[in-house]
Amino acid sequence: MPTINRFADLADEITEWRRDIHAHPELLYDTHRTSEVVATKLKEFGVDDVVTGLGKTGVVGVIRGKNTGSGKVIGLRADMDALPLEEITGKPYASTTPGKMHACGHDGHTAMLLGAAKYLSETRNFDGTVVVIFQPAEEGGAGAKAMIDDGLMDRFGIQEVYGMHNMPGAPVGTFHLRKGGMMAAADHIRIEIEGVGGHAAKPNEVVDTILVGANILQAVQSIASRNVDPLKSVVVSITAFNAGFSDNVIPQTAVLRGTVRTLDPDVRDLAERRLKEIVPTIAQAYGAKAVVNYSRDYPITSNHADQTDFAASVAASIVGAENVDTDVAPTMGGEDFSFMLEERPGAFIFAGNGDSANLHHPAYDFNDELIPVGCSYWVKLVETAMPSE
Image 1 (cartoon, rainbow, N blue to C red):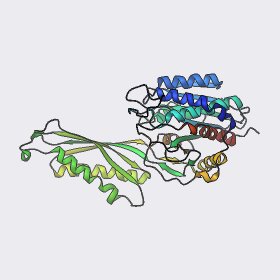
Image 2 (tube, rainbow, N blue to C red; image 1 turned 90 degrees about the vertical axis):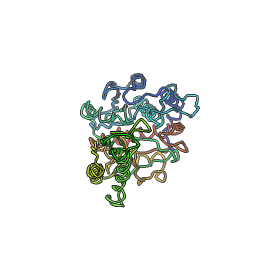
Image 3 (cartoon, helix red, strand yellow; image 1 turned 90 degrees about the horizontal axis):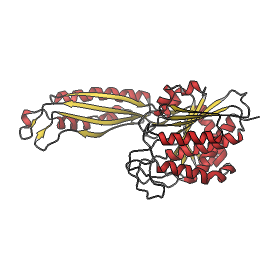
Image 4 (cartoon, rainbow, N blue to C red; image 1 turned 30 degrees about the vertical axis):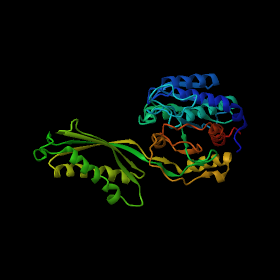
């Protein structure tokens, strides 16, 4: 595949960066070591401006082209945080921190954007400004929103923004994207139930919160099966059920937690409304009380049409049009790059990670063969969007 030749020379060095980050995973906003590594390298590359502490631990680098007369400013984003998992890869560079690992490839995303920043700082073969964005807390912490709230878009004058994520199961050298909703809105629910506790041998004298919770769990599945258009998507998953501490006590309270995933704003509204109708009604039928706390967390990751076409054309220039899927099936996974796409036009793209374990699996590892491909995509995007002549 016609990747930029310079990245064949840099591949080993970038791989070393990636594996160093992999061996030292950090969670959410506690990416202090990773952020320091990123900032230090950007300064070594000669990046014009390096800003730290944006969105708590985010890092931003500003690279100006040979010319800036076009006035164009494009943002490129990578995420830095890891996951609370125990790694089982057995690799020489495996996590050195118990209970933490890079199980989603953010180490690779960071390394690829660093590689692109090094190249762009050396060549500056573009007319405009590139803003490289290294974001903490993608895994549930909404680090993208935190950086935006700290002025990311306005402070650096970003006009368009692009993101990339590796895709296990897809061959290295392939890209996958689509216009519109590509990844789901990710919302959280917490259901608090209060009944009447008592002796397990006298269930007639209590209001059993476990029974109430079990019926709520079953009833909310009707949202997907009976409330939402079958041609649209919704997931309502109860993932935690906490009640009781003893085998002879029926508990006074119970808490259910879970997630709602949707690809359509109207379906999102419907799911929230039906949860708030179903849950207290079921509880009341058993003589209990229940409250739904619904938290809208990550929005739908929705690609903008023009920028999606552009990203696809850039990908095709690297791997060939036959290796670019422009109608990839949406996923119900969430991604906080969605916040950036709400602020500015742009596109999110998947890059094949080969035959690896799935994301968030303790045996997952980023495929270093992807590094030259991903770096080339970033550079081609910049040089094509902001040609120097």
